Amino acid sequence: MSATVPAGAFPSCPSLVGTAPARDGGSMYLGRMAEIPGRHVVLIGLRDIDIEPLRRLRPADWSTSQDWPVEPSNAQRYGIWHGQRLVGFIQSSEETDPQFRHAGIDIFLARGSQGQGLGTDAVHTLASHLVHSGGHHRLVIDPLADNFAAIRCYEKVGFRPVGTLRQYQYDFTTRRWRDGLLMELLADALPLHV
Ligand SMILES: CC(C)(COP(=O)(O)OP(=O)(O)OC[C@H]1O[C@@H](n2cnc3c(N)ncnc32)[C@H](O)[C@@H]1OP(=O)(O)O)[C@@H](O)C(=O)NCCC(=O)NCCS
Image (cartoon, rainbow, N blue to C red):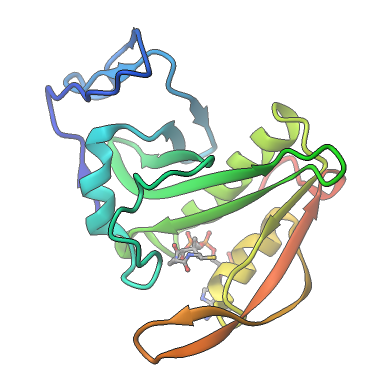
């Protein structure tokens, strides 16, 4: 499943000004929106008109917040685009305390876009951006301990398991806490290509 860009819409986003070329001949992108090209996907700073499509695309257990993704947050948020299709969401959050400076990544892909290498490309693209443009030396990511596709995807980008985060994430369906896996990537382990 994926969403197409609503043609002709111009998102209201008063904090951002300016315009950039249309990607699909219809929708305009705001000039100061980040656009980070990967090998197969492009990460584009989240726009208002991406929010409803992404709410429909997100896996049910990915975020239970009613307000997602507009709740207050210091995260940098991007839509993941494959060609003209919005296929997922990725974000980075930075710890800015100089003593512990690092960044974390979260991602989901629409179900129909999984298993084609797009997640690996998106994570590699954002990780490369955080290391090369953001100057980060260390990145972290925290999949559920039994999310083997995610763990394999992150390993391909150079993340290594650090340890189990016991009873880390609450599952509102089963009403149980689930273990997570803390994974980290040091900048010199980031591959040039994946
Ligand atoms: C996790 C996710 C981002 C990965 O992106 P993706 O595009 O599906 O992953 P890729 O196709 O790039 O790579 C997946 C890898 O995992 C492997 N894999 C898939 N299922 C697997 C399983 N059950 N066990 C082990 N490896 C598995 C694939 O074979 C592939 O590895 P390979 O290229 O060496 O063969 C995506 O599947 C997703 O959004 N899932 C739902 C939400 C989610 O879990 N988000 C992450 C929260 S931390």
